[in-house]
Length: 245
Image (cartoon, rainbow, N blue to C red; front, side, top):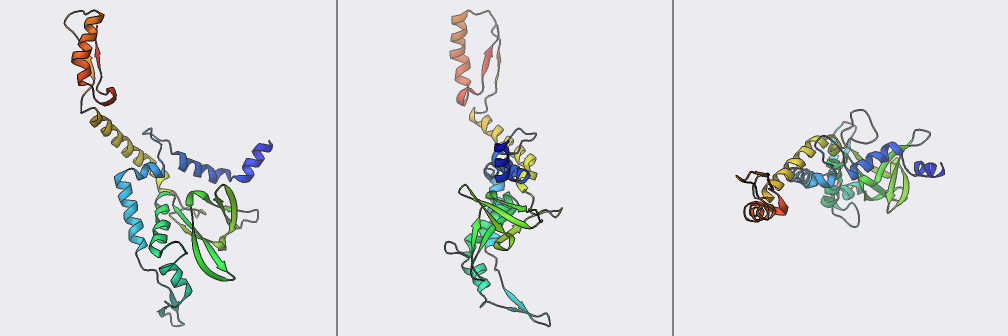
């Protein structure tokens, strides 16, 4: 019981189970375990995710001030403009940062960054891995974020986390995972690619049965196998043949 309390104290059971499923894969009708990593091995998914991430990351991020007459004025002198458009943090350009924020949306449906402050002044946005971040609510129904940083959990209030939430039709605290909800389609595509790879690996050689015209003894069967069956087997024994009695 103590171990269970310790586990449930460290984990949000319902939300973290979804995270584990994302890492270990979704079981479905095709028999494949679909994860963000396995989805990236599909050329179509790779191309789409790369196109979305690289395109959006190069779009301008403007900061505007709205006057009393509803007219907007660009504010390139604002500190937030520098963070969003030029240097979000000490390690990344704006394009690198936004590319890294958009890509997790394609996999997990969420993207996160920690807001770094000096006093009340926002000075940086530090990336947080989506698979290590979980939005939760305390006993007072206040939203906070639990971030696992190198094995250590850290709870951050919502005003310290920049959360880009994907499609969430039921007002959830986090977006729905495209990989999870497209698991059947992705799994079918993975199965098709693997099936075609196996077919080509054996040189398009079909498996089958051999029916000799006469009954053969053990030595004759072995000679027949060596001379007529094995030469037509493909890679790793694919395209097998069985000699019927």
